[in-house]
Length: 119
Image (tube, rainbow, N blue to C red; front, side):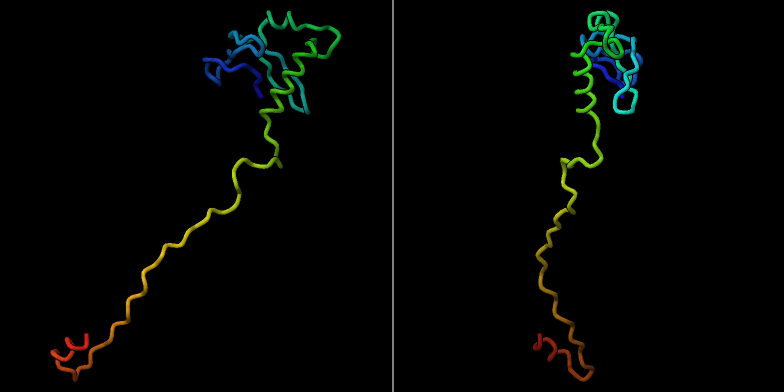
């Protein structure tokens, strides 16, 4: 997963918005979290401001917390309740017209003028 701030830059480009200040940057760090390695876009100025040599990856606790929240909000969970229903759609039956009556075959012996009276 690429971790960056939304900007006017193309999403598939090699320059993205810095995670903290949104300035365009190509400077990246590999950020391991939950058995995956993510690409973090962080400009050199923000890296120097958030540098903490006592922590892993030399980043401050505040930045670690922000990155983990970003990843957790954008990671799909396989068993999470979906926002849409998985039930089949309700199909409403159309109100049908009554069936047409069966056609009564005419007898060959009946004259045509008597058929008009039957109908």
